[in-house]
Amino acid sequence: MFNNLFSKFSHDLGIDLGTTKTLVYVRGRGIVINEPSVVAINTRTDTILAVGDEARKMLGKTPPYIQVSRPLVNGIISDFEVTEKMLKYFIDQVHRKSYSLIPRPRVVIGIPLNVTGVERKAVEDAALSAGAREVFLVEEPMAAAIGARLPIQEAVGNLVIDIGGGTTEIAVISLGGIVSSRTLPTAGNELDSDIIQYVRDKFNLYIGEATAEDIKIKIGSVAYEDKTLEMEVRGRDVVTGLPRVAKISSLHIKEAVFKTIRTIVDNIKSVVENTPPELVSEIYERGILLSGGGAQLRGLPELIKSETQIPTTVMDDPVTSVVRGTSIILEDMENLKNILVPTINE
Image 1 (cartoon, rainbow, N blue to C red):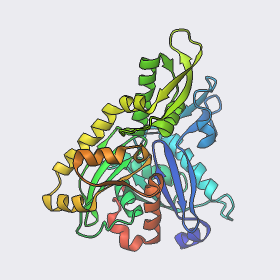
Image 2: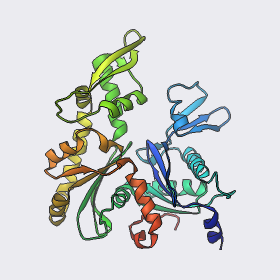
Image 3: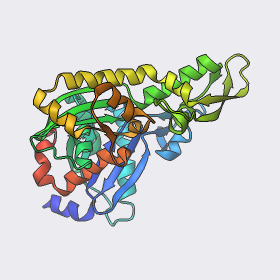
Image 4: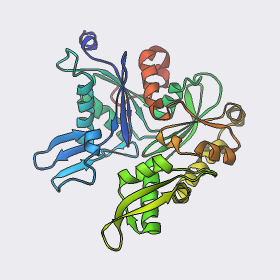
């Protein structure tokens, strides 16, 4: 009875709880939240000052008593209380214009592959504590495949690679399950760290995370291009400690991220090698699909194709593929419930 009552005053949600960004889908309204997974806390009063975009603007600019943290590391909750408060903030934002005083939505959340029972329970408990009445979990590559409308429940091979902020997940999917897979703690944030280190070593210039991410988005490339992209980067000189500007090109970024990209490509090969031959032949015909923000790195599909000899493409709007998958699950829960991860609290 209470479930029926809560359902009338709450919006069912699909959530991509990522290391870098959190996206929220609302049933009947689409994706309404796409904000960084960042929280700013006043340690003197133990209160939240900002969440998402507003908190991200504070990175590297706060006094000692304001802590700006990312409560998820490699897709896993590292700070339970902060994650709970962040989820509650997003749930309240969604229901701000509704008549519900205490929103109690059903929630489908994307989680990384191969998480432990303890890590899975942390996600469930954080969502329940934040106000969810029911929590359903789905592995992120599976959600991305559903978001791309792949025939995951048929006896065909689908190779999906989700390159997020904290993890890269490689999965071969067939008959509603994952046949072979690998999860790497190597993804977008690692590329940012590579760029920071390279700029320091090559140009004697300190830059921050936000600047490194901006460089990656604007001129980041692993392609052999005729046209070289360039941009000016402002930072702090390593020697003098004073502000300085350096000109950086896409060739520099290619050199900076080479080792990380090589690690990802080698693991893709390893997953293919451990996949049954019947599925490999179908993957060769159907190709590899890339999702996640890291999939947008220039030249990456071409590099993977040249290394694996398998056609490789990027999904439409790869950043939202996982949350789109959770939305399809919400709309067709009866037919897709077999692909959900069993919850610890069941």
